[in-house]
Length: 300
Image (cartoon, rainbow, N blue to C red; front, side, top):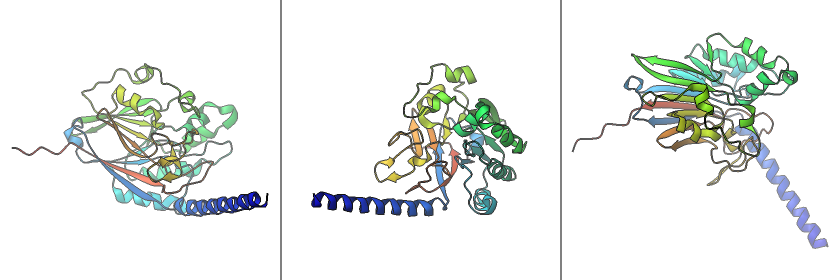
């Protein structure tokens, strides 16, 4: 009996120490900010967009990096992007939470480059369930600068030297954010929104939920920008992210660059958190992507 009690006591101490260590690491990491850079080479890219520079932000959840997010804004300014894509969850979708801080952060970016915004699940539910969230979405939307392009299941065109890229903001539906289980996406879901894909053109999706990367790619999206998973919160060597916000352990898509059928997805680990504040081996990140055509092959 005494041996069992001693073992339990030792295990309790070890677990407490581990939890304290995790909390300390998480506290430190949540206040750091890194830039993650990707080079994407795609033969489908129009030649005029060679070297096109995209900055992606995702999952701010009201996180602050410096006074009025001056550190975050300064780093983005230094990157000199051609365009800024924001893939949702800038606010915390809980009744009564502030929306002005996230909106003002986004507004400050409009002086750097054109800004395009698509919804995450937090903005989505605030816009739909107004009985619960009252005027949360309306207040957020009204606070945003008119210079910010909000894409709610909509398409816009990026033009350069008579060439173009099709940019889409995909809101999805609450059912496609269901926890614990992955709801299948209906076969005609994307075509009902955007029609049949013209594969002669180049298409970029802003889609908060990465779970449907293969569906985006099968429709014809050459490049998808996603977030939502927060990098799996705690990242373990060899295993990756431990837990997604949808209560799935070791999600397939957690953070980084993914490829399927010659299509790509850039999945941001995000900037902030909303309920569980843990980040271990998973620094908040700004994504920097440069688009290029593949290098020319040398002549034999």
